[in-house]
Length: 177
Length: 123
Image (cartoon, rainbow over all chains, first blue to last red; front, side):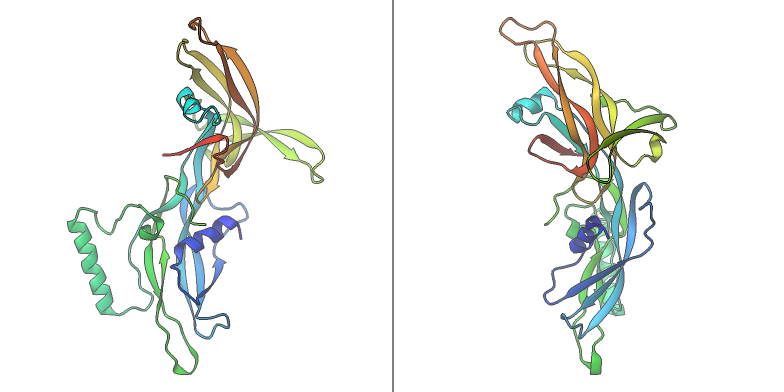
């Protein structure tokens, strides 16, 4: 699995203590993904601890693909502003998450209704149906609740993780590494 | 400033530097591929107007990098190896040097944009 793909998942999962994450890519070809920026499905397995006492699996999506970029001689204004150190300018777009929606693992109907109401509020505020533009990746993806199954009827709280619902070549952002 | 964007149906030549398995020898391979299908980063013709205060501008055609990189966050087309050329700009004031140096891309690849020698922009 490429480091690129791994960083996707690191970015998608909320920081949850004691949760161990395992990924398995689905549908990767030898030639890699098609041109453009597309949803890329993963099975994510979450463990409550290193031994995997409680665990749950959920399908999530990342954004993976090819976006245009170029590097060329810098304009004089760029040269002057960088004390003549940046003699090359690189302009680029990156494959990133562009749309969010809520998906529940095994959440209840009451929670889904609350979510529908939140979406209606967003529409009234002018965001459009189910659409939120990306400012930060954590806000650009959707939350998925993963229920962890435990042995002997023990209970563990659901774990929230994030997944993408739409992708596009857009502004590159600094990674959170 | 613009990369020469010919029709996507045109073929363009990509010069790829291939390191031999032992890393000792370097060979050049010319590959013909459709522009709209191209992945990776390659040397491509680029024209811009070289200008600085006190001189008139001069249109220059050189080699730059262009491509489609498998991006997540920061991987972009980058100049992996560059040369340099110098030209004399026309119409410079007496107190302004007419010399203008600019980089020339010899090899390109997809990599993280380095702010050490590159102005990293996104749009």
